[in-house]
Length: 267
Length: 327
Image 1 (cartoon, each protein chain N blue to C red):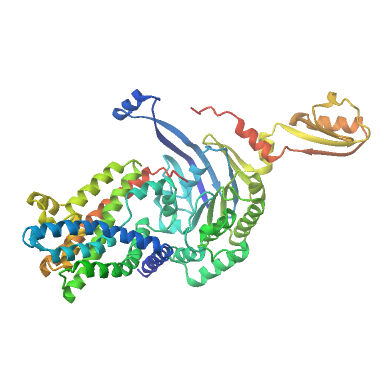
Image 2: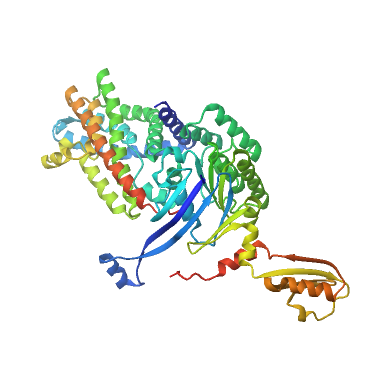
C-alpha cells in the first residue's frame, strides 16, 4: 500500500510538473473551455426569462450556478481520451508502459489525478470571474461541499475507467474513431453536459438512468447546487461506485484479452 | 539454470491482404483475407547468467519480435520461453523488476522534464530503497558523464545525450537481464563507444546477462563473445564470433610481403590488392594452406598473414543467402 502511495505520488508529481511547464497553454485551454457552458447558459437563461423567470424549475441564477459548477466538473472529468490509444500504440508508448512492473492504468489514474490538483487551482479565478458576471444562486452547506468533493472525484473515476475501457478497443483495431464519436455524442446528450436532464423529454431521462454518463457530469453538479437531498447524494455516490466497478471489470477483461492480441507495433 | 531458455519459439503475425483497386477494397469490407507471416520460426537457445550475446540479423529477420517475446511484450504462438525462471508473457512484477528492454528509437523518459525527475519516478515504480536508488543514479551519472545533462529537460538534449540518460534511467533498478535493441542507432562514434563501455562495465560489475542487437558490428565485437544469427525468423548460427567466419566465410585472405614479386601472380590465385612488394590473395578456405606453402616455397617471403574476412563482410554474406520459406 505504501509502495502504491509512493508511486501514485510520483506520477502525480510528474503530472503537476509537466502541467506547470505548459501553464500558459493550459490556462488558455481552460478559458477556451468556458465558451461552451457560457453559450448554454446564455441560451437557457434567455429561455427562462421568456417563460417567466424559470425553465424546468431552473431560474437564471440556478442555471448560472449549474453551468459555473459545470466548468469545474468538466475540467475534473477530463481523462485519457480513447483517441490517445492509437497514438500510444503507433508511437510505441504502450511498449514502455508494458515493460514497467505495474499496470498502466495506475500511471494514467495517478497522472490525471495529479493534473486535477493543478486544474482546481487554475479554475478558482475563472469561477470568480463567472460568478461576478452571472450572479449564480449558490449557497451550499459545508456538508454539501464535502459531499460535492466526493462526487467530483467519483465522477472522475466513472469517466476515467469508462473511457479507459473504451480506448482498449484500439488493441483490436486502431481505426475506432467512429465508435468513440458515437460514445461522445451519447454522453453529450445523456450526461447533463448539454443541458440539465430535467429539461430533456422523460424518455431521455429514463434512458439516462440506465447509463453511466450522468454520474460523471450532472450528479456532481447537482450535489453542490442543492438540487439533491442528502439521501439522493449518497445514492448517487453509490451509483458512481457501481459504475466505476463495472468499468474496472470491463477494463480488466479487455486488458487481459487485448494484450494477448497486441502486436507491439511502433517500436 | 540458464538466465534465458528458449525452446521452439515461434511467432506468427496475421496480416490483412487485399488486391489493389476499388473493387478489391469494397470486397474486403465484406470478406477480409489474411495471411500468416512467420516472424520467428522454431528457434531455440540458452543463455547463461552473465553472458553477453550479440543477436544478429537483417531488418525483418525477427530480432525485435524475439526480444519482445523475451521481455513479455508479445505472447509466443508456440514454444517455451523462460527468463530468470519466469514466463515473460505472464508479466509478473518480480520478472519485470529484473529486466529492462532498451530500444534505440524509443524514449522512456518524460520529454518535458529533466531526467532527474523521471529517475525519481522510476524509483517509486520499481520500489527502490532510497540508498540503492541514489547509489545507482550517482554511479551511472559518473560512468556516463551525465553531470551536466540530468538537470535539463530531455527535449533539450541531443540524440546521443538522450540515449545516455535513457539507458541510465532503464538501469536504475539494476536489472539482471538487459535486452538492448539497437541502443547505438543514430549515435556518433564517440557516443557509441561511451555506451558500449558502459554496458560492458555494467555487465562486468553486476554479472548481468545482455542480449544485444545492433547493425553496428563494432558494438557486437566489443561486447559479445557469442553471437546468435537469425534470418527469415530461423536460427542460422549460435556460437563464438570467430566461429561465425569459419562457418560462413568461404574464403580467406593471404597477405604476403615478398622481395621482387613477379608482375603476373595469377597462377597462384586471385589477387585482390597489390602495393609494391605486398600482395593480397583471396582464396577458398580449402586452398589456403596449399597457397601459403607455395608462396613460402617459391618466393623470398618476409611476412605472411592469413585472415578471415572482416566480420561485417561475413555477416553481409550470411544475410544475402536466400530464405526458402519467404513468401
